[in-house]
Length: 371
Image (cartoon, rainbow, N blue to C red; front, side, top):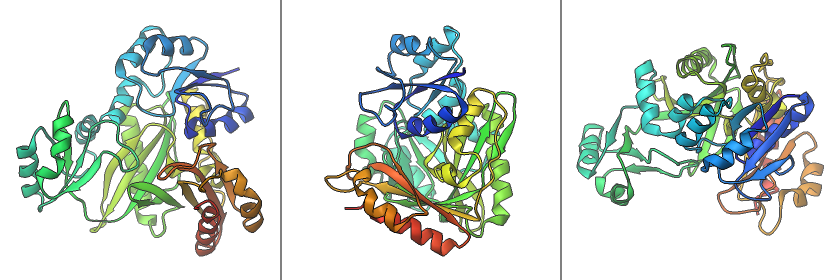
């Protein structure tokens, strides 16, 4: 039996459980705290920043993979030194851990990205703002997600607190005029085999992904370019597992890479119900170097809507009697998380051949959990 260890006990680890069971893979999780989303499987509790804890966990599995990208490089180095198989490998993971490193590596690969600079102080940021039409997107290089660690500024003083707290430079990028945001998922196994899912459109609300439409409407001309771009990045960085490439479709019709994630990603949750092979099954296949599955869509359209915040004073399953009765064709996914403003506590997915109906069904289903 294959044994896969997942560092991190969040919803991404949770959604690996079903394909692991189906394929006879033993899944183990190292969670930060008890009662994690992934507590349905054998779960160890410990600090992913502690080498001894992680090494002890790795001793019982064949391969280590991740629910998040935050494991320190010194811990990853200790794993490799001890002979553990780590996928994605530390060198690739480093690109997703630090946005400045990401920009450097993507630039070296010739990937189209927004104009950027590492800015060490307010004067450098002010000069960047002047050179880029009076605005900049400022990002903390590490740790930001769901809109955290990102600000649009028009005066360097708006980032003064970040400079005061920073231990190194911040990332400044041009404010890109774009039509919409897209995402391209790709999976790669160590032998080099690659599979890509349909290009999707993502909708962001206050920095949080709230909706995904697969495939991206009206993007047939961009789809091949996006798949080729993601494939070149996965190959160039030596990624193993699922890679999510978040993209801007600019006002003049170009594709620019915004962010990377080297793990299953919110933009791919629709694949659980809407694709022949989900991103979670594919990730397990890839890190175990098994032949990859068919990533094709099962239906002409799928729409995934995140449940953000959740029902006040209740959980998603407590609302199921009404929600399931009203939307019997929609698939519901709970992350076993308490409701909290701004927190992703689950998602719903609808599929079919009429995009307007599919989108309406998904939104109506998610609305059962909004208050």
